[in-house]
Structure formats: structure tokens, C-alpha cells
Length: 110
Image 1 (cartoon, rainbow, N blue to C red):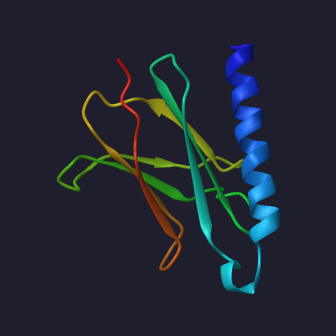
Image 2: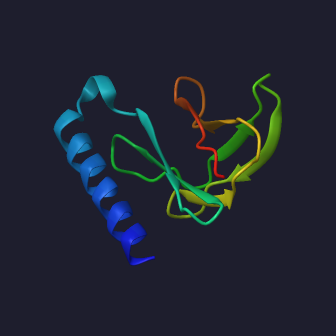
Image 3: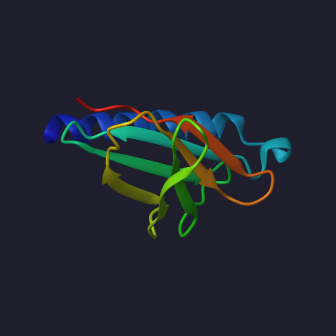
């Protein structure tokens, strides 16, 4: 568990540094998403905008390979959500509104 927290802290620090170096008017509202395998059968998704604000309250969808929604979730106040990993290939879709969406394949757990 301590190893996971160190890994999560390192990833968050790298993302924060990256955002600090790339924030500009052209990227004022870019939405970013980190997908973390908690190595316990669950997945945590973190969302934030390039402005530094969290993706609090945004809808998050898990989609199967056909693009059908298999689960709808909502980001918490810190812009995070944790869920049980699907046993099928899936895509994570974070919806921040028109022009502010991000999709990424989700990790499969054994």
C-alpha cells in the first residue's frame, strides 16, 4: 500500500510539473486524465484541467470495445473515482463538455 501511495504521489508530481510548464492561453482548459491500477482489482482515475482545477463532478464512462457504455460514474470533489476493473477490454471516457473530453484504454487486471 505504501508503494502505491509513493507511485501515485510521483505520478501526480510529474503531471503537476508538466502542467506548470505547458499551461498557456492555447491550452487554457485542456482536460487531463491519469488511470492508476491499484493492483487490488480496482482502478483509480484522476482528472484535472490544465488550469489546475480538479475535474470534480464530471461524468466518467466505461465503454466496451463497441463503444457501448458499460458503467457510468461521477468524479468526486477531488476529481477522482475508484471502481472495480472490468474483466473485458474497456475504454475510460472523461467528459468535461464539448472540446474537453479525453479517452484512454483502461488497464486489464488478472
